[in-house]
Length: 255
Image (cartoon, rainbow, N blue to C red; front, side):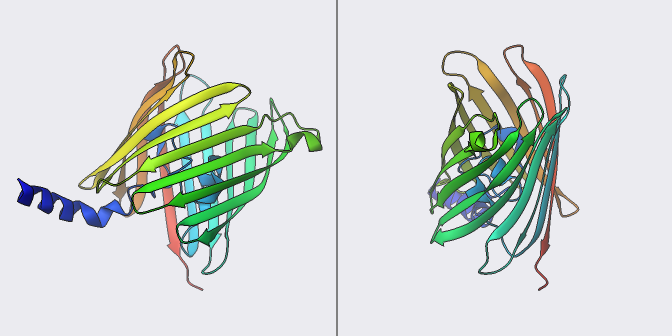
């Protein structure tokens, strides 16, 4: 039995490094504060946007009985320089765009900050900031969104997020996230595990006072070297179905 476990561990070890570094995880709900990375990370934690030298892009579309939700992002990174990221979401007339700088602070720790502009039901200019630490087995992150919106005449509510992730098991990760905005608390748990060439994910968002906010499952895989992410689930107390598809691309630095 011990020999079998050793073989499984050795097979999974090469992919364990990427288990929490996927820029699009639609199957994990909103559990991104400690595990989100790439051009879409600033939507949850600006510190997760630090990336390898090159140009990176990500796009997610979610279809449901409501209007489609679009997430998009692009970033550019160079060695020994901050990663510069643009990211946005749009659903109907509501949209928000973020401009973010993310940079290493010390070994395993990163920070990010930037400015955002929202329009639609609630509009205004605001700032956002976040910190993230990723160790060999644990990750911790925190972020604050919509800072000082009132200074610019905006009506955006401040949102606080905190998250932690455990990826001590090779090829797997377990994450928890807490969000607080306008007096509403949202707790999300999620996880992912590599099964050979497919990354399986799940996420469950709960309102502590009662009710499920979101429940989903997803898979991630490479199609002709292009990372693809798919997810299905339900949202709200009426359990409205939704489906998501995400695509990401990475061009290594040529400079």
